[in-house]
Image (cartoon, rainbow, N blue to C red; front, side):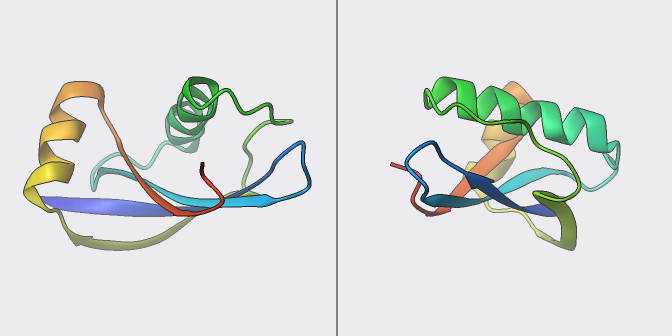
Length: 87
């Protein structure tokens, strides 16, 4: 399965910047849906944010999905790859 990777940076309330990728099926290019997935992830992490826009989140590239990514995308529509300051 090919997936689209959306590189995302969000300012946290403690002034740290979260860096994570929102990974979705490659045929999903609707920014509003992708940004909604990002908001859902932030809400689950109990991180307050002013929101996700093209300033914070941009399409980066397409790659081959891992089995873990495929399973998560099939279950909830997206996969989050945590990179920096996500905990």
